[in-house]
Length: 310
Image (tube, rainbow, N blue to C red):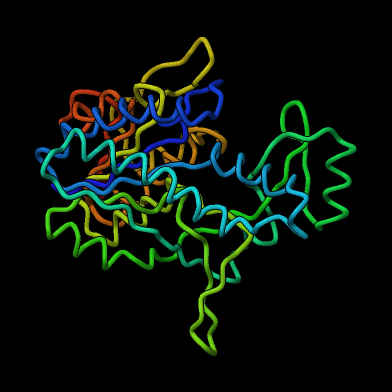
């Protein structure tokens, strides 16, 4: 099978961990070990989150007195693709001796008229006290909003229209290469209609929805969304919490999972299954092999066609 593996932000940094390089080096061994079992039997594309790393670089860029303005998010996102891709690639080469592994810097085209640009919804960067947030908003024209115990920058999160390097990914897969790409949803760009030039955006693309788009474009057989829980849960965090072991796209959407956690993962799985008729799975990193083989996680499969009972 051809599988797109979407790693969550917590693959390299678990909740509460400091974003130190050594912590990420340690965690990446666990990631590579979980994925290696799949790579022995299947064609793999690996995507990954980048929220902690993007936030770290954004904070450093904002605080750098040598800069007249912080670096835009498209360039910072490209940096995270290289950093995380390098960690993944060299570790995967160690657990998959003789196998070709490559990291591909990936751009995601979005629509310039996407409604997300009028309604920023993605938090980026560190928490600031209110006074500092007001200063940054006035200085750079940023939209700042409250997030838990402080204020953070809020940016647009347009939908992925096309992964520009998808054709290259297909060629690499056909040659037996494990491909790491579309990190953090890819670098968001728009194409100039007059010149064809690509322009980066101060925005982010949801990593799971970009993985679903990529999976469609490379004609994957399975979309595997990995996170830090064993499966999707109905009524998560309540006394009525229960595991969802099987679901259809319609059932996932009807459950209205939270936007800040399971919502994008559920929507990504639903889109891929709906648009391709293939399967998707959502579950824990350490159970990656078992999820693909139907022994763990939440399996998402197509809705049954309506039956004519007339």
